[in-house]
Amino acid sequence: MKKSILAIAFVALTAVSCKTEKNKVTTGEEVKDVQKVENLANSYEVNIEESTMLWKGSKPTGSHNGNIAMEYGAFEVENGIIKAGKFVVNMNSIVCTDLEGQGKENLEKHLKAADFFDVEKFPAAKFEVASSEMKGEKLHITGNLTIKDVTKSITIPAIIYNENGLMAFKSDTFSIDRTEFGIEYKSKKIFENLKDKFIDDLIEISFDVKAKN
Image 1 (spheres, rainbow, N blue to C red):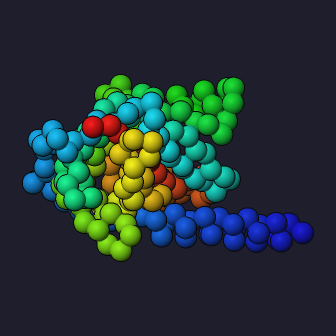
Image 2 (cartoon, rainbow, N blue to C red; image 1 turned 90 degrees about the vertical axis):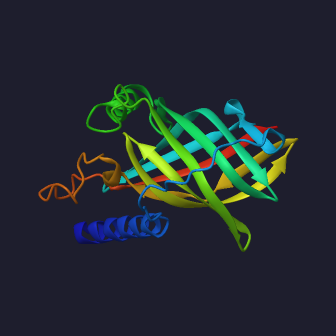
């Protein structure tokens, strides 16, 4: 019976890991030629209250998820393509939505601590658009993601649409490797003797941005 339970747990963990790995975005060197939002006629300012950004982190015993609030965002659209854009995320706003009480408080406190996002020193993360192109039905947005003062280029698949008079774009769920941004806490890539006490290096992210002209 014990072996059966362990086998089921292993299969479940492997399935989750494979799914997260499949969604992983490839990081590259910082793109130097980042476009600025200049054409006011085609520019949109993000409606913070209507926009959402979700996260999910995993470990062998399960996963936790929550959201983060945007602080500012603006982008320029030309012929259905996002030509330029800048989005700033308030890292102090990170919350866990699958826990309550002391467990929730402890996790949120740790995510903000120096050995994770270190929000006292790095209160904001940002994404700046360098370019985008349509591939099939998806808009692939390439830009610079900065977390903890480390900048990497990534490409995010998304859809762009209109909803109730607002311009919007919604990303696929994608994953980033936190160690590439200096977040090494309980990473088995960094620390070899963690056994099953590690935290997955990949963090899942998705967003649904609403904006007005």
